[in-house]
Length: 322
Image (cartoon, rainbow, N blue to C red; front, side, top):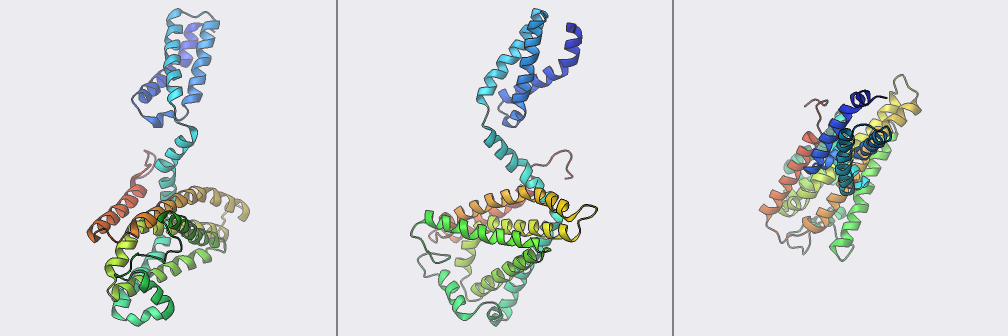
């Protein structure tokens, strides 16, 4: 192949590689995706140019690109961190927006009973006994008693770190139960979403009604932004599996279920990360009742705004409707 033809075939790639190098040299780590394969392709071009005895001008140009690329290659983050960064920045929020119909239904199933019952118990306090018995209610009262030394669930472990592990196990158990039972034609996920909403509503409503407002709401406001949202996503993913079985379309149920499961995987990974964050906040922040209520309310509000902004704005591309 003549040098002119070789240059015509590859000039666009060399310019693209040079642009990618400039972005990397300016610190844009997202440009590392596919960089290694592009670098290998450039090295092949350089070897061809040398083997065929092309002009020194072309060889020097390609060699300069190769040397700059070699330096960048050693600064490249590991594949794991690249994948994790891409997942959190793009894939997870995009997956949630793609399944927005299921997410909206799950949100209504979870939040609507909670809000209605919190309000209803302020008018008719005895409604709480339709859901929990007196013994169970007294346990919750002791957890959020303003005179208590610690807030939240009675500590079964002696340190915040051990409670962190307990919260991880407990929260992930609730979320995966809400997701997995959706395979029963979505009924299990619907049940657990409504149940969790009802339970939170009666407990929150009762504690508010007896005057434990500050201790209860300052405890839950921060970590609930991640925990409740993650459980809602688990229910949405479970409902997707269930409704796919009910209405597989032109595919067999097995094929439709496989496709739905693939689409739910990013949601499950993201949900797990959110529950880890929630457990950390619950163990090390929420239970601390020495902090002023205004600080805990402010941080909690910031957490909710951050979660909403993340799933609304993160990872949008030119191909995704705004």
